[in-house]
Length: 200
Image 1: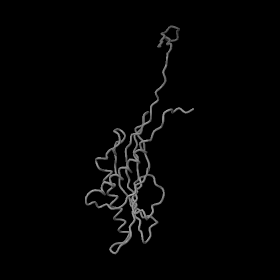
Image 2: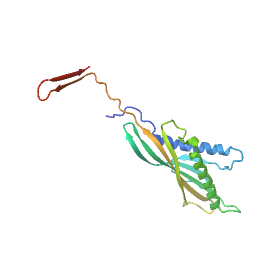
Image 3: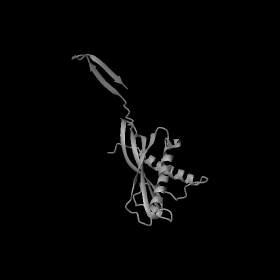
Image 4: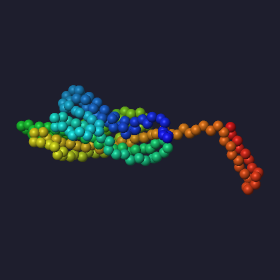
């Protein structure tokens, strides 16, 4: 027999994953619309995408749930240090002045910088989520990789940003059951003398 009767809602890390992607998409699109913007690229932002990056896409940002460690346990929940990977893929074709590899790496670095700035901005210290859910956010660093699917005509560059979020994860407490009456007896030493307690 199932003992959990209430609907289990989205966990904090699920909400945070989707919120990270929405923030990145919103802020980059806003940057594109500012005067003299240095962003002209079309940006595809995804969560949990597993299909390979296509060179025709030019630029992709993919938010992935990585891992979590829990601490400060109690009946109502626990605190987690949850890690997210934010992958930035870029392609570029060579021109008369520069190789495709150089242009792709410059583009990648630009968007790694944009994402880092956005996520560390003070406006997003709690990711815009309700008070009590987020206890801190940190861009821990990033790494660069060389994908295996690059070709001479379209070079692919990729970086992974490591983003850590402290989340307060909760579950409901058991409400107990109503007791209509309690009866017990207390004996004095080994005799039959004693006190009787009765609550109704």
